[in-house]
Image (cartoon, rainbow, N blue to C red; front, side):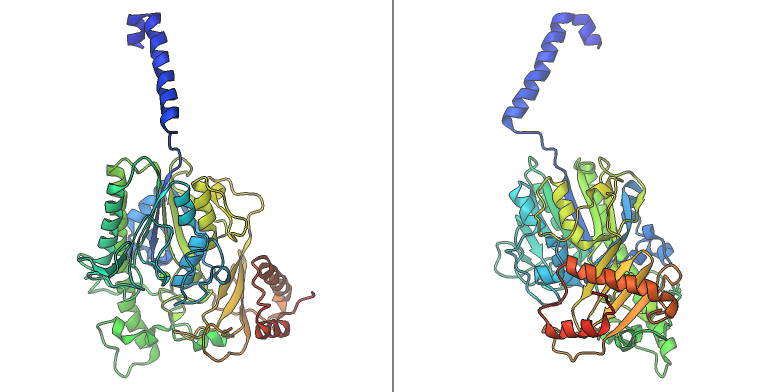
Length: 509
Ligand code: CA
């Protein structure tokens, strides 16, 4: 203002001309990039109970302060659910926006068809620089990425090997897997073309088994016990044979996972308590290394002027039992395995320290990222963008229930194949118990479980068949059938599936 006062009107006109000329020349050269960068950080099995921002019985010990900081500056979602709670299928759903039976990865070990539509390919075609570092677990070589370095299957924590884009053989990187994956991410960002935006997917191996950690976290709580979940000693009374049959119980955990031997001549309760302590300490220590690395990524973005123009997404491929029901691992439709963490920071769209309770599924991730990047969402995508929800403007007709399908019948941990619906108040699970050509195990007896989540959030009391719930059951069965039709998953191509559903569904239609 002082300058204009001194130099008079002529200078003012020239200054205005200069502004116009700048705008014109910028327009002529190239448009100002307004699309955000996207950093998609995914832990493996890093369940909400292990993230202190979510509260919970372990929050005092989890202490994920860097992830918590993202939540305090962004939005924490509390009702995000996976559609098939196991690694490869959830990853395929995240990349495609489709359920397992549509993207072709229904169980572990199936090869992902990289020629199908993926979010990374679409963003790449729209001018984004795309990269993936860390866990892939989809067998085929990744497609749609300008650069990638991916672990073979699960990879290992110490001195991990990677498939590197453009290299024929595995390359070994010295160091701790979590640190190595962070370094790969920042190295890519250092060398990127700053004139176009990026989508970088940083997929850590942590906190997958064998839940290893490094100093200074590997000796935490050596001389103290951590709290137990209230249903650690679940005996599965009145519940499904599926829950009773599974080998997800802590006392059945793979012996190679832990250095300490089991107690000799101990009863199951004592054994479960003993293994739980080893398990939970290992899991949370592993999570501390992961959280430290999220902090390193944030520090990098801040140092390089990218913190406020990058959408930072933190999630995991599914939830995980941390001793609830006496279980470890995932697979079941019970809430601890079903629920995914999701925290998003981007000040331009997201109010700091906000929370969201909308029902979101992992198939929604791809369309949301597409909309963030201004890319069209294909018609056949089954998820729905939640960008408006993120902006605190949830659409009026947002979904009120989610549909789930676990296909991997019995394989690995003896969990029967099941479908189900979760509403805000109830959960209905149908263990149809058929391999459907995907596994080689015998069929198990079909059975139902139903939970009144308002009165029984720990899912300990199966109310299926109780007369006072018959109205709710009818409604849930109708909705479940409707969801099967919506997602084209009625199983009509499997005569045995049709037969089982006809015998066990009590529907009017
Ligand atoms: Ca996983």
